Image (cartoon, rainbow, N blue to C red; front, side, top):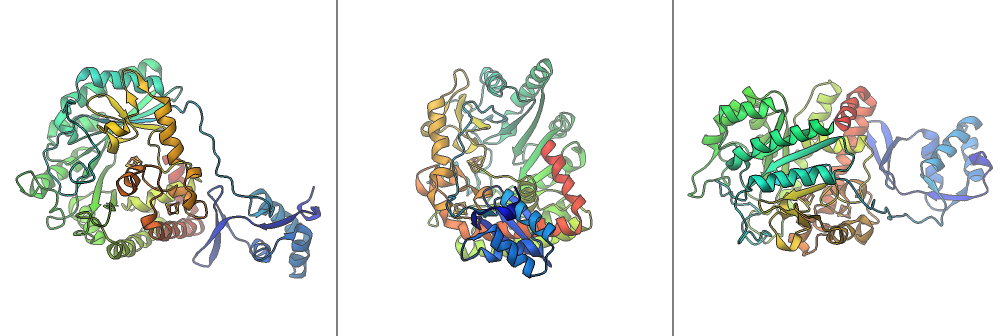
Length: 481
Ligand code: SF4
Ligand code: SF4
């Protein structure tokens, strides 16, 4: 039946409009889809802004404006199909039942909870510490590591492609174990006809040519924690207060020279003291040579040391937007740009991501501590109150279901009217716990910031789709990988 012949009344569905240059777009909230507005579609939506109308009424208004009948039929059918026109009785549904057995895709192995640095903002120290490591091993033993890999393969069901991230403490303080795990997991993957790859996060202090060559030979992705040039890296110090920059800078350059099989990324922690994103970005790309930089602000409670307050978050947003504009100019020119905060969000927009949970924690991803305890992700490792099981016995499905049901978008009523929820879904469970004492609480302290940043990324995505659509194929490939 033609949409035009339908007697049903329609109202506008839930959407967020945005512009990219001369073009108007719509971000469709219930599905995470993005559509470029045609003049006829824009007019139809305008007509249902304040009251519902039947398709016949809309068709007549469009015909009076001079649009041909065939186009009107097509546009109205498209708007109804894509849920931009919906019945006035239709309420948004937040119910997305979880699959009974969601196979694991990624595991984070905390090889040690020890670190040779004492970074002043580290969540392992201070009031936000969740870990209860007392009486547990400081370094993961081989038997625990082997059981972890066996558990991971068992609980990853039929997945063909698996990923292990090595984490700490300082990961490389347990490098001999890392090597053994890589060999064991590759052998297991080959025998089962599956694919596995690896990544690690390190503070770079312990890198040597032999370690780097092992990482390169095994195509292990590396993320280096570094906050910029010496004056901005000042919170990353040894226990005696000695700065780490002069030790790590030559090692990172060696890493970038010798390790070419996978991207080497920098992860920058922004604090109240360090918010010069552009200066840091220039230093890490031009002086050091990173080709991927991601920023993460410390946004724990405002009374916590080093937490970035609202004014500085605005300053960070301004700089993110400048770097996003630069990213767009590069994309139009078919050149890669290192700012991964924008590339990761654009990738999610391109893939139509529509999240029931903010991240994979406790779902397709788990963290495993040196004791073999399973937790939702690396940030909850070693915390008795967030333990979901043990690698010897597997995950406790009741604990997992409780964690996931509290973190589901359905349970976050404040988010139900927010257009940014397909990507945000309430924000990090760990941050929610340290802020509000509940992993399922939405992170309501920076919603305006999230919406402004998501809108900027939508504008970048829309502009690329108009000016150089083939650039977006890069994100198809990332999805396949
Ligand atoms: S936490 Fe805030 S920004 Fe995120 S989905 Fe909820 S209301 Fe929106
Ligand atoms: S809970 Fe937070 S830290 Fe853990 S994986 Fe999710 S977003 Fe990352």
